[in-house]
Length: 432
Image (tube, rainbow, N blue to C red):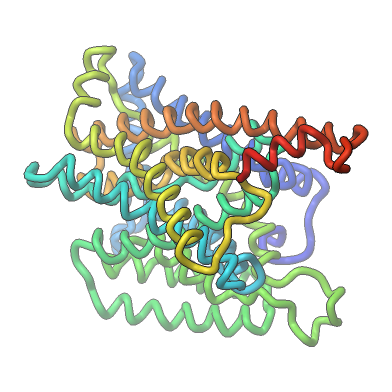
């Protein structure tokens, strides 16, 4: 435990942690978990998969005798949202979201990427009764998956594109948490929710004093999680609340500017390997398994209106919402698109926004229940929509990657009469 909160570590743990912090590794583990789940659920050993998902562990007296699938959704994803919350706060305090003029474009893109898919899904499922309850499923963007795809296909793409995607996805996650807390809380117990404020406040006091002792912080974090879970609010909200209490700026008494990273960056550095290397892949393993039933079963699932709404929301809704919101803000406000980006880049990024794996699966379970027929169709639709979005984004951004690679190569050759390399001039024309 000392390696999570404290300074001490071991060389091997350090090496593994560094590997797991790489976006490509986290995305690969997430994909591996999903593939294993799908293969297992459609194999002769599918009953063993279901038995594993339904295995109950935990103290019944605290209402925590949950199936393993429930522990993955409520417990492990709380770690994922804790890391996302730390990232969000760092963006607001010390990152791009600190400057309103720089923040407004990706924030507006995130809002557009939530509203338009929700509206499109609702239009497709209008009049279907319970089907409309899944309106929020296509609104989420999977940070780990999207950044992993971008890292693999875009080595020459500008860093501003990654920053734009990261900011968009983090704000997207914040909106998803608000949606889960407000719209997918079926029953609310006020006393446990008020009780959660006590350990949360104690945790906040300790971290504000830059205390990292795991034996103090972990019990308070666990108590906050248990009480939020008991209140009826989805327990992942506890992860975000805890993260937002962690200070980003270095302590003034820590020795000046060279004193090292702030506590939020320290915790993010410690917990990201746990989130990317264990929490999210295990959630994928226990959530993505669905019996497809061959080509006929796949077609039946994808022609269901719930599935059609999800796929349309992820592929079409995300592209329209993100691109349109970005254009409107750039057109009618003083905010500008980063000078290093072209509108084709934004289009490719909007396609990446349609990778809605982790949180989309979670919202699907909350909307329709775990293991129901509609939940199975949600999984098929989310997997299909995310895969198609990733493939389309790969095509567009690979083309852009070649353009930026030519720009880099052109910078090393002689300029033309204007002093500007021909390829660079072409790329500038493309941006305009």
